Image (cartoon, rainbow, N blue to C red; front, side, top):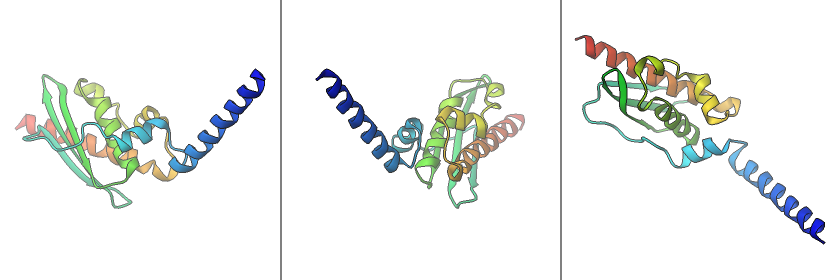
Length: 147
C-alpha cells in the first residue's frame, strides 16, 4: 500500500510539474519569481549613472545607478516589458548591487541567463536588453565622474 501511495504522490507531482511547465512556458522558477515579484524596481533620484534603451521587441528599459567608492551602492530599473524583461532587469540589479564597478563589467547577457537558469530562445533578447542598458548606465556614470 505504501508503494501505491508513493506512486500516487509521484504521479501527482509529475502532473503538477507538467501543468506548471504549460503555464510558465518552460520558464525557470527564478524567471517566474523575478518576473512576478521584481526586485529593485523603480527610479532613483539624482542617479550617478542612467540609461534608457528600447529593445528589438519594443520593450524599453531604464537603469539608475548610485556609485560610491567604486561600488554600486544602489540600483533601480524600470521597464514597460513583459515578465521576462522584469526577470532580466531584476537579475542585472541583483548581480550588480553592492559590487565593485569593475566586477560589474562581467554582467552580460550570458551571465544574466545563467543567473536566471536560462530562458527560452525567443526571450533571451530580454537579458541582452538588461545587460546593454546596465552597461550604458555604467558608462554614463563613468563619464559623469570625469566631468
